Image (cartoon, rainbow, N blue to C red; front, side):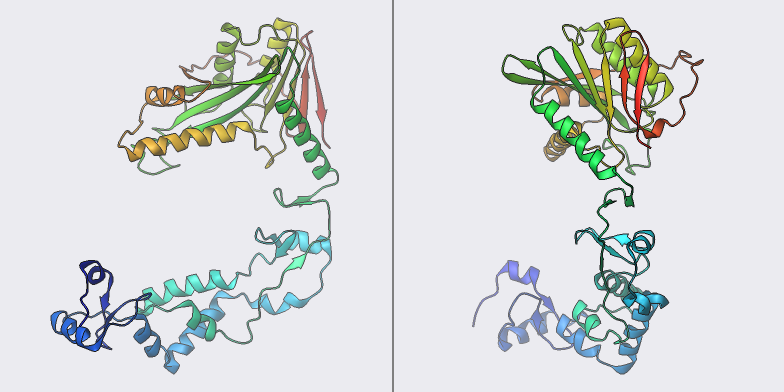
Amino acid sequence: MSIISKKEKNILCYCCSCGKYQKRGLRNRPDEINIQLHNKYSNSKKICNKCNLRNIKKKSEIEIIRKYWLEETPPDSDERNEVLSDEEIISNWKFCKKKKKVLRHPQRKTDSEIIKTIQLKFSKIENKQISKTTLRKYKPKRIRKIKYFRCTDTSYCKHCEQSTEGHKEFVNHQREIYLNKLKNPKENEGIFVFDFGSFYPANCKIKYENKINKICDLLIVKITRNANQVKKEYFDFISKNISQDFHYVKKSFEHLLDNGQFSNLNEITFFSDNGNHFKNKKTLFFFSEIAEKLQIQIIHNFFVAHHGANICDSHLGLVKQTENKLKNINIIPVTCDDYSNLVENLSQTNGILLNVTTSPQYSNILPLKGVRKIHQIQYLSSGKIKFWRMD
């Protein structure tokens, strides 16, 4: 007679209907061992998966399964075989990420999504568990498979879920300029890429909802060329200020100006996302003042919405990765000082603490119309502004 180890006893589960001590993935034990275990664990009321599937073949339960299937599918699911034009597909159908250039009905769910909801309903209402195979087996025949339509419109963008002329061409052109600037910057040229990030310490009970203990980080990446090498410097401006606004941006760029990060530069280019904290009347006027003070032309490029992935995202992801490694060793960063020390341990990174205060400066500036459509601004050395708008 074979002997069962302690690990197998903890893994296995006794079934009160068939009188066997088993679980999925393991073979049935000999009858002698099952009899011994039955005598030892006779008070158990658990049922194995095989017995549960046998009990489910009753007609009443099959009708309940079909009823749940019909409740989850919309009534207009029979109209999916109609041939639609590209414009109707784009306006009424969603993009499916699993398949490229494929759209599906927004009200219609896939079979796997419906099966998950039915399993939850059955466990709550009927107090039983059903496998996916049984639910697929007793699916009503009138519910057809979901149909996918291939979109032939080349101007359709899967990230923005809209079709506009010249949108894809402009995004690709902007991405090429950005990558060329990162790889091959000119001599005496400074490229600054900046974006906001946020950290939620361990004392935040509910992530993304408890904003009292949130710590913000404005990351500015400086890229220059020294001889034949491309140099990258990371400046993390960490603050307790929850509102990521103009005052935060102004304070951080003033710190760079005071430390001489803009000196010995003949050309300056900015890259940032399309957020309101970078594209408002106060920040535009402040950047024009920097260009007038340094007597240099600054070109500011704004990424298109949903297309702003840049070098800042990879650095912020590395910071969060090191944070998770420290948590595994029971070293939990909570305050701004902890995060600044965490950042400074990374290569070529400077952690700077900021005390952001509001001021009534730049309150008399007139607003600029159509700011969201602007994707490139030139700050001239005379203090004037030129912008390029995508209509």
